[in-house]
Image: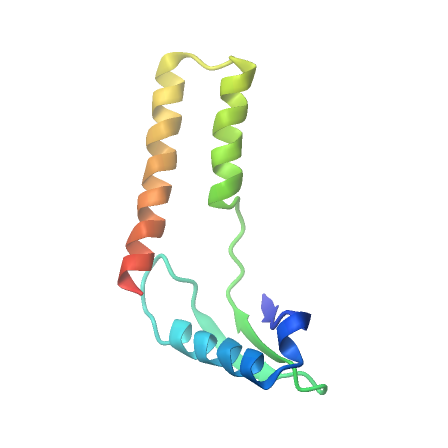
Length: 102
């Protein structure tokens, strides 16, 4: 997966520099909750990019929305809701752990 500096920042030196600093910092972290960065580069127009492993799945925001959507549909029994909530909480704690590590 490639990530590119956003257009509004890519044309400014400070935006490009920040993008590269963040990619280099993230690439130096080794943690199961942080996606590794495989390489940095620049497009011919000078915009920086980095390559990282693709992770398939839903975002935390999407998982939270799905949990609450099931609430609205009232299709889950209390035991399923409890299991779903614990699963969502484990994902959230994983994100917190990765942020704390960084």
